[in-house]
Length: 274
Image (cartoon, rainbow, N blue to C red; front, top):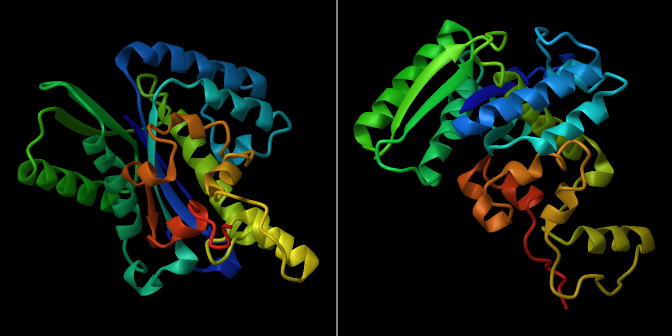
């Protein structure tokens, strides 16, 4: 499993603090590592980078061939889980002055391992992109405590490695995936025409706003907000990587804080359904 984060834990939004903070974890079978490394090489070739260059989502998205490069993420073999914090929706006093946001996001993403099916005795190596010591130590302690309290049939080892490390280059893929996730949800939170309210079908909301009058809803059986989410340029290539792609099952692999943000972004039933 390769883990990386995107965003910052600051709350000075008028000084360019990110709207969201996210951590993503990509679980890869050993036999698929070579395939994914080849995808990484293809991405670097499109960007004109050397094979030894480190790539970050923040630079890739601004590259003239960034969209083409990120589209290759759909060819990655693996399973994805993540944790995202909508910082404008949480109590900042609980996070300012410490690194708990980073610790919580990384640990919750890793806890998704319990939702997967592993054989008894199977071994999972979790490699996390290097962070500050103040972040790494609490993560180690929490994961060690969880292992003692909740015995598993499989073994989990956690290490911290630089994404430039030749043996852990797929952390760079985790960076691209996590950046895509944050980009998508920040877009939804900052663009007024993309924010949905009252858990209504997006088509119904749009129709009412356009006509400014009562009208019949366009959806007959309710429309999944997930269909709208996967149309996002940032999210569409990576959506198939989630083990479950129905909103009801996403909670095992897709953690949101605060929890009610799931209602906004993973709309289930249209309240104006016929």
